Length: 162
Image 1 (cartoon, rainbow, N blue to C red):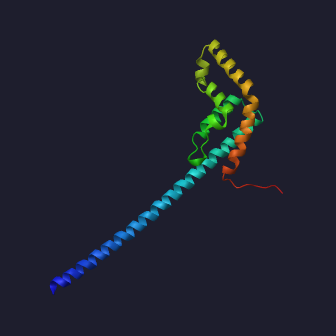
Image 2 (spheres, rainbow, N blue to C red; image 1 turned 45 degrees about the vertical axis):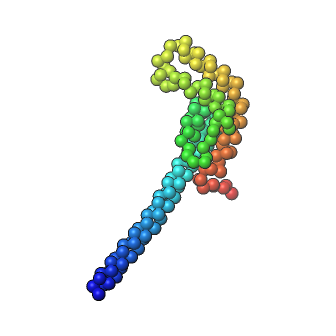
Image 3 (cartoon, one colour; image 1 turned 180 degrees about the vertical axis):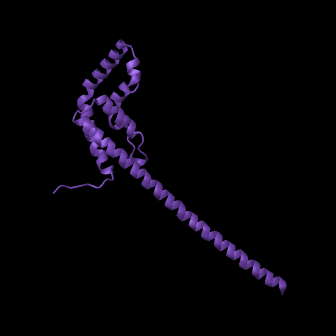
């Protein structure tokens, strides 16, 4: 009789521990799902912020408020931080932007530019200006296209004027 009683108590303990382990497993699975949802929302929020900045840069480039080479560098570098399915392959989708970026990416900027010899600065200016002159129309068209492409990806609340 005591063996049967011990077996029943042991079975109850085993069932209780198995139930508790199952409960913890379900709770852990829900927690992982919540973490994934939070990470996805954080990525979407970050991407929306990036797209807002790129939209502003595209507008500045379209309205020629800044050098195209500076716009191209900033847009290309900022868009490199986009995560998920919304990443853009500039070499494939926006070849003129990529071509100008490829020309100017290794050129000295800021203080490094000031340290260059005058002749080297002039060579870089000439190369940049030639590329900008040749690609200006294409880049402005591509900036307009990029602006329209990222507009629906920007999760900001649209404001309609009445």
